[in-house]
Image (tube, rainbow, N blue to C red; front, top):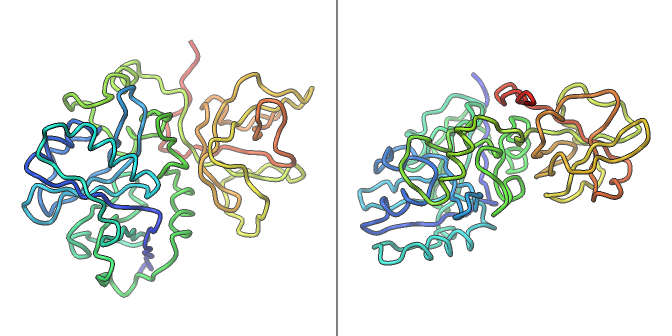
Length: 324
């Protein structure tokens, strides 16, 4: 029998959106099709966009277990104040209430072995972003977790490692508020956007990009290594790696071996990381492993001393589009 793992995700918070108009209201603010959701049914992954089409935050939208028209939004806890303000801004005369339920409700993830969400919790879903991520579910803070004995509890750090190795961005360290675009953030590949849906806030740019059919940048896993080390040939975690890594949103540029010059413009931005692995938004034509250049962290003038970056796009990320 396969051994599974589960963890409480303390980095996530929960907003409760209730009221007679809750479903219609959220339908106009999210990238996914809320009309598929039913009380007690599975939740879905989605994004909340600002009017310009940039991502405010990603979130799981879960229908409440009872037929009261309510929803539970699972999002990065640091993004919750901005998300709550966003919802209240657009509520206008809609019959909705927005409340922070984080003190009462905890977010958990279980992965590594087959699991039926409905046997675990009343609120949750099979994680639609990638099959290897298992099940996302919510439960009261004091509620025991009803998982098979083959599942062992672990830390949120282990979930983050598993998520990064799988190539899945999550939270504001990976998906930058008011900056990131849905398709560059892989929402189209993670079941996070419905292109047949009617109007919603920020839809125009997303649909236009989709119909153009070209997404030149994507969030992909990266491995950080020392300049003195041989470049990695595959993505591997090194728990002994102790170098201090730059913060999220740090620029990634090309360093040319021939003259030591940096590319004039960035080719990516660093996201969240742990040990020697992380995620980064990278131009796909520079995600390959050239012999005459390296990817480096840079402020545009100097590089982060001693560190190099190598991208490892997973098989489910489309190849770089051909230049016109």
